[in-house]
Image 1 (cartoon, rainbow, N blue to C red):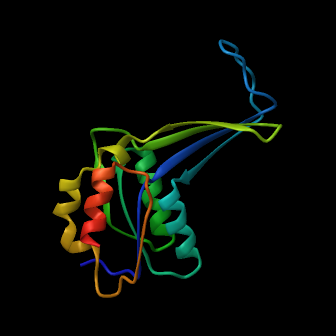
Image 2 (tube, rainbow, N blue to C red):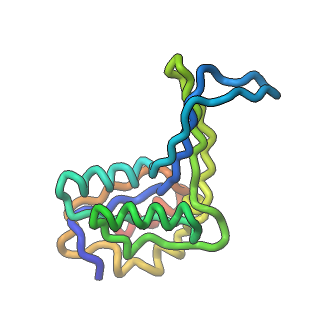
Image 3 (cartoon, one colour):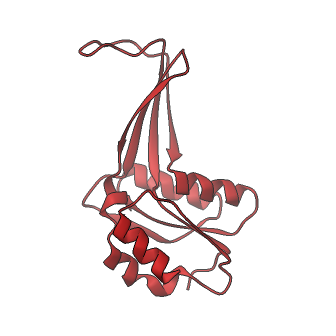
Length: 157
């Protein structure tokens, strides 16, 4: 059984961020100023921040068995986050968010949920025995997945 004092459930996302003076008009290409890549997802970010603050955290999510998925796993390992309940899939790529930020401070985001929306209630049921242990005192679900999957996890909790 997995050991952690807090379990976070939701999306694990790779953010692809471009910075530009202004957004392009439809059909136009503009040169950007900078590119950054970082891990994201509301549940994932909360999990990492709680681990940075000293909480013994675990993550429940589904990610792609791909380069971005491996980077997310490496990030969890860096902060000693329990990944026993991070499910891998070869069927879809890891969730991404293509974020553009203009000098004005406004942004646009195109989010591809990928495995987050492919996580089904029966997959949650198959790992039910691993989800909540005697040490788990906090469960933080986010509404980043399918409603029926969230319902299944909440029922177990």
